[in-house]
Amino acid sequence: MGRWLARMIVVGLVAALAACGPSKFKTYNGPPVTQVVVSKHDRKMYLLSGNRALKVYDVGLGTFPTGHKQFEGDGRTPEGLYYIDRRNPNSRYHLSLGVSYPNAADTARAAALGQSAGSDIFIHGQGPEGRVLAQQRRDWTVGCIAVTDDEVEDIYAMVRDGTPILIAP
Image (tube, rainbow, N blue to C red; front, side):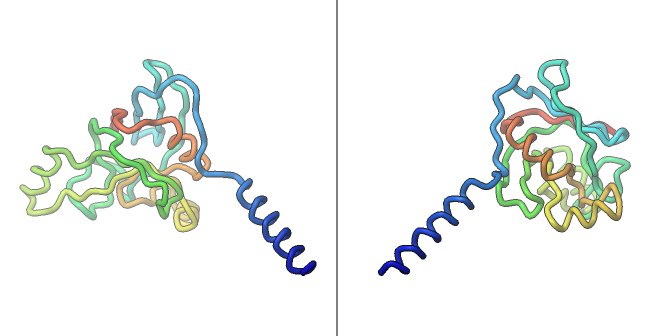
C-alpha cells in the first residue's frame, strides 16, 4: 500500500507541474487595438490604438507577395480592408486569427476568372512546419500573414474579433 500511495503522489506532482508550464494563451490589459495595418511592401504589421502603434512586427506573406490575391492557390496575400472574424486556438501554426477574406468584390473577381476566391486567410505563427519553411524563405505561406509563435501569442491576446485589418500593397 505504501508504494502505491507514493506512486500516486509522484503522478499527482508531475501532473501539477505540467499544468504550471507556460501557456500559449496570454492576457492583455493595455489600450485596445483599434486597427491592424499590414504593409506588404515593408513586410510589417502594426497593431494600432487610434493613431499610436502599440506593436510592430516583421511578417512573412504568401509565396508570391506582390499583388492582390486573385483566386485560390495563387500564393498571394489579399489587399484591402477586412476584419478579424475568427480565431483558431488549435492551429497547426500555433495560434491563428482569421481574416474576413473573401469579400463580395473578391468573390466576383475570382468568379469572372472562372475560379474560386479561396478562403482561410489568417494571421498565424509558425508551428514546427512553418519554422522550417521560414528558415528557407521569408515569404512561405499560401497567402496568410505569418509571425513567430511568441508574437502570435501577443497578437492573439491583444486583437479582438471585429477589429479592422487593412492590408496595403
